[in-house]
Length: 282
Image (cartoon, rainbow, N blue to C red; front, side, top):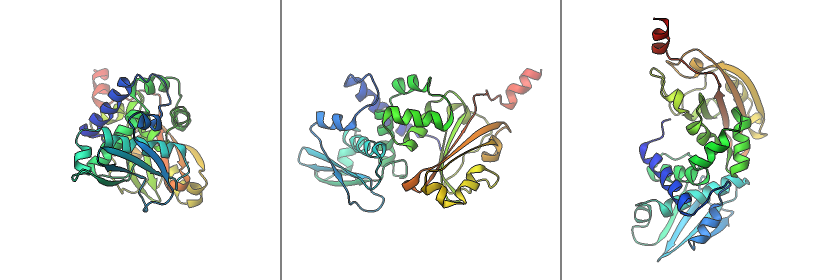
């Protein structure tokens, strides 16, 4: 999926905050940022299904509670950063608390298509993985899932949010695909792939190509539950209509309690589109 302009703006707002706070190293602590702004943060073991956390407002006082049903530090930190997005982003407090007080439940982690939730997700990504610091680390991270895993450890962020940021900022051809069972939930591509003139975007709920390692991996749900991994080779056109037929590495990882699978397609080879090839032949 293409990152909407309003989400890019939300990430930029987060990066402005990082700069304003004088933060120059990773990881960035959203709990500390909340405390600095007198926002109380607490864990909440029991929330409604699918709810990751909430922002509460009483008068001029704000509070954040985050779910603990997924025992993952990166998930919890991203949830707090998401709620900070609702606090800092222009227009969010007025929209979410029209009466000046109340409680807003969030579904963070790039699962909601509500524009306010999308903005808060991208704010969280920009806050925890600001472009200048993340790209510096990315230059030394390597390739594929190993790079994403290392960056997630450095930033103390979830694998999925790190993978999405990795795809957004990588100079190489990269696609990050999250699937559940036989269907694709969403996909993010690096700029070099997005700019291919004839490539068609993967749509939500499309079926996985059945010739791929991801399709085979997802056929056994235990692979997802235990966090199994697989490596294979694939071709770009097998995943994306209109793409050139070039070899891509395919890293597949089960995301355990998330009940989803992460696939990373990548290559360090340059992709030359057909127009460039025609010019070269002339």
